[in-house]
Length: 129
Image 1 (cartoon, rainbow, N blue to C red):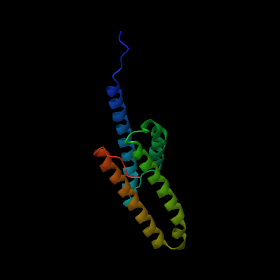
Image 2 (cartoon, helix red, strand yellow):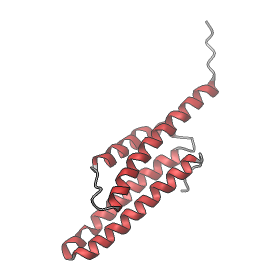
Image 3 (cartoon, helix red, strand yellow):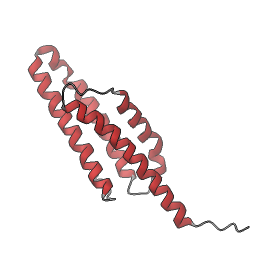
Image 4 (cartoon, one colour):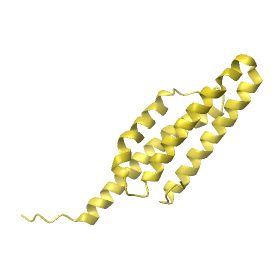
C-alpha cells in the first residue's frame, strides 16, 4: 500500500465542505432575514441561533482560506443585528411607529448583508474587512 496522500484533493474536499457549510448557514440566515422584512412570514429565531452555532464551530476549519472572511461576516452580522434590535426595543414601548421603522431598517440591513455575502460566496470571493 502507498502512504502518499494527494494534498490538492484533500484541500479541494475541505474547500467544498466549507462552501457547503457556508451555503447552509447563508440559507438559514436568509430565511430569517426575509421573514424579518415581510410581516406575517415569521420563522423561528432558532434558525438564526443554529446558523450562528454552525459558524462559530466551523470558523476554525476555515482559518487561512478566503471562506474564513464569510464566517466572520455572518457572525458579525448576527451580533450587530442582535445589538441593534436590543437597543431599539425601547422604541416599541414609547410608540409603535418608531419601533417599527427602526426594526424595518435593521431587517433590511440584515437582508442586504446576507445577500451580499451569498453573491460573493457564489463568486468564490472573500468578504471585505
